[in-house]
Length: 286
Image (tube, rainbow, N blue to C red; front, side, top):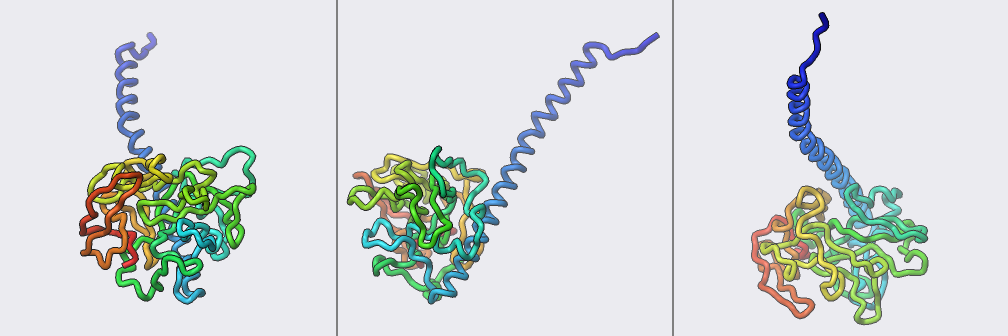
């Protein structure tokens, strides 16, 4: 006499497998995301170390990016200057960056990181920035931040637009990207697609109108949560990299120290109150 599983027994086994899968799949997904976050952190670390080498070679100053008399271009094009210290385009790409390069565009690479223009070099004397030795809090001053929708030819120094366009690596001071087209000097925001911060909203109040990640005029708002587990990786002026939530980071604007107010932001006819400390990190060059 042959023995076999009954229908009920088979259904029970299938139910148990389904329950285990429902429990384990999110765990696997979290593990994969953590691996991508770690890879992104490694990329930022490589770029931060390259920037520190650049600083040592250029009188303790950060790269100035694309030389221009237009203030809004301050810091844009920094990736082309630091590329010779890395010589790897893959280091500039976060595994979680969903940016795509349009069909027909050649010689361009995705750049998932933006330099903090508050500490970047000063082209043509605009926005004079301190040397790294003058910073009083390099461990909390942002050097690099995660961005999206940016591609450019970073293998050329100085960095060069692709296909005759105006695509340069993006610089940001935490709430405003260097892509304003109002004065005829742009757009410097990757073919006018609207680069954005991939950090989630910065500061204490998570409102889109206050903590910007936008194209000129506020038309391209960033996402309310960060790229990695609702947060993002940040590289700091001393070279270390850390994952932080957006509400732990001040958008910053000329703060004297971490206990000072972090600046008032206004754009597109809106304004809000000043960021209030304490913060874990700041875009201000303190």
